[in-house]
Image 1 (cartoon, helix red, strand yellow):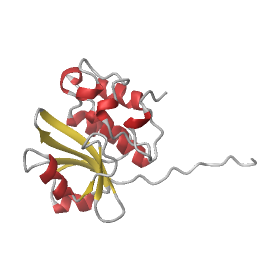
Image 2: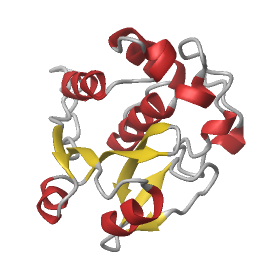
Image 3: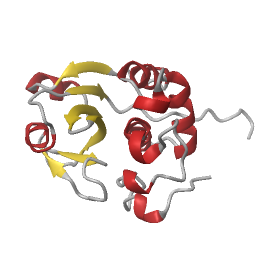
Length: 176
């Protein structure tokens, strides 16, 4: 039931343009203004191989987040959501040690009008691909330090870092 326009997503199905997420309701202000948290969670689930729909992720995170209609998703709600999904998230400040702990995650940092959440996934070349950091930018690749320096108004950022879950093994019924 994905109602997002194709230009809101990249070739791999990650949401990269929050400005085009109006069709997915989120709180009083809508996804365009307050949707970065659910978008980051959706993108992380996509990286995990989950078949979640954007609307479903937004709906669940809206229910989990106090004041989500006004201020977006809070970090505790994101942590709980990822924990329930089995991703074993760890909330840490951005450091070299942090980046060795997980493969992917959600980075939270300060922007002009508040905070912003962006999912990051490994790019296979020692850096990360940041999803929805710059609206519509498909290949936003950088090291974590470079990204924070370029995007954040403060030199500090936090990450919810996760590891890829092992694939689920289907059990075959005997005699079939």
